[in-house]
Image 1 (cartoon, rainbow, N blue to C red):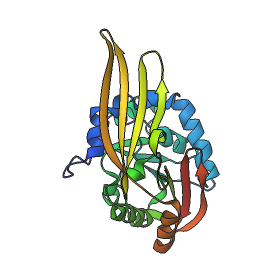
Image 2: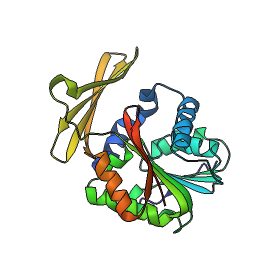
Image 3: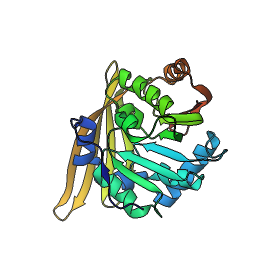
Image 4: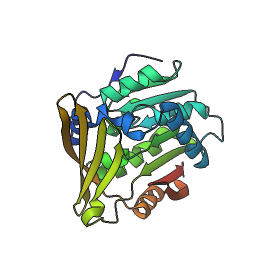
Length: 257
């Protein structure tokens, strides 16, 4: 593992999502998953294989919004020779650098919109953007630009895999309050407030400290993405979408160049 973290973030204004992770969520991110890195990586490897990755000889893979490395480790398991792991959270990249084996993962502190600067045109065998990373982009135009950049970065036959939460259906009333995880020392709940084009997500984390329970809170905005609209956009760019389905609480799309 390359324990240094390449910094490609210079020139970008820190956006509200990055501030949310730096100020609150990164410190609790691995805990809120409720599973070890090895277990999450095995889960993600199974999902990625079902979505068409690993079936052919692999080269470079790119993990956009890698977090602590669940998909990065999964990509190594599936046979990719090297993974460029991109995130805007230095803390989560440090977790990845400490946990992932060998020297085949390159952690990069960067925005996923910087993809053209991170990988040579036509060189990637796979690009994954999973979890809710795609919804962290500020505008729908940014999503379309990412799809075009991914198409350019992939080699012929390369694959783009996306997962995201389908926020097109609006939750109302008490349904907006979603329990995430709780144990003896932490309780996490998120609250959703819907806008026409996005959702404001407020994370509430109660932490038991010496003096009692302390509330830590922060908000950020996610884009509302419709699965059908994303499939149509990918097809217009030239992708062949051959997997398009629900995957647990997320929606999954796998598209081949």
